[in-house]
Length: 220
Image (cartoon, rainbow, N blue to C red; front, side, top):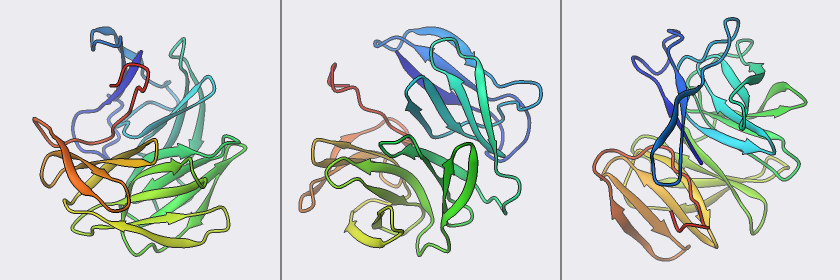
């Protein structure tokens, strides 16, 4: 199955109308509002998501929601309101399940460990949008938002490095496929391919692409 995050209105509006849809591999809707949050912690505007074991984590306006991926029930909520939140955007995790969350509005990366959020990287040179783990070296790669084209990577010691510079712009989701990076570029409505040398448009999209996912079993 696939999971698709949905919201209407402003991306930081607390309107309790966000939901996550479950579809089959062909895109047929199985449950339109499969995940909706709770009365205490409603889902406002879900965006980036990441699955760790049985839990789907979704970034939202005030924090990160955890849902049982099988039942759709909300099982956890990590509150970020103690921080000066800009725009919580994307989520990834390392091999032990520690979450890393980007803040595009206040250029940071947060770490979530044992249900508690802390600032991991602050005052980044580019506003981070998408985040993904490089399986070759266990470093995270950040996609820059806005006119910046420099992608950064960081390790567990908080060492920030330049990963590469790509054509396109207003980058969003990104994923590794083998050793190659696939990136959503909203500036030219494309999914771009980058292998460290070659930087090209892989496909053009009908609209501006945001977060992406890859199913290697179906080549989707």
